[in-house]
Image (cartoon, rainbow, N blue to C red; front, side, top):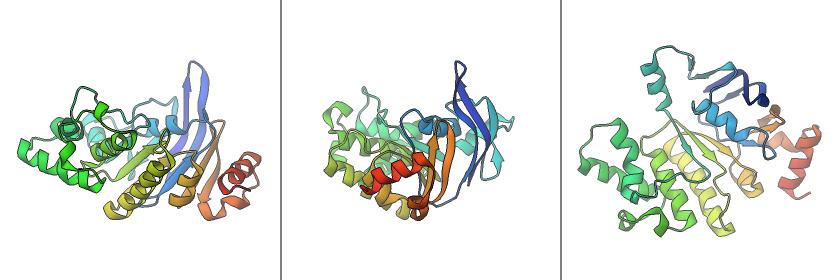
Length: 244
């Protein structure tokens, strides 16, 4: 599990995450919601180590990321991957090179094995090996998202964070990505964490729901109970999700 204790993050004295604590349970598909600017992505980027907190502690499987031995922290972070909202593909690299990038960085596998692994994960995200030599500019928005997802899972992470996975996609493609999230969660037995404000995505995938409001957690429980939350912001969001 991921345990977050008394975490605070600020930028130029503006507090974005304000002394929050929560536990993200293993093998549960957790969705993090909230209005824009409430700290959803900042929270997860802090968990990944991309942002340094002002205070607080993050532990992954009871291992504190405050551990002073850098090599141990790096090994622990290899358990985690993130699908960025923009996909964050390298424009100058082919599909093969983009997806294989983590293996080139962290393993000494020969090219033949790397290519086989890339083809394998492309199939998992419903992409054909015929696009191996294509560049991101040659792909549709949905294909770029799946390409980036293939790169995220190629090292078989235990924790996968999706940052707004359906933003900017048409409804049909967004539906395909939602099905893919559910399918990969079940097939790969990962702990999936999805940051989103997409009502359909929330309804279709969520097991546990965390809602942030002004840098604070206002809801952290099973999604099935969310309709009954009395917090004003949560009630407003529930009406939006359920079309009430």
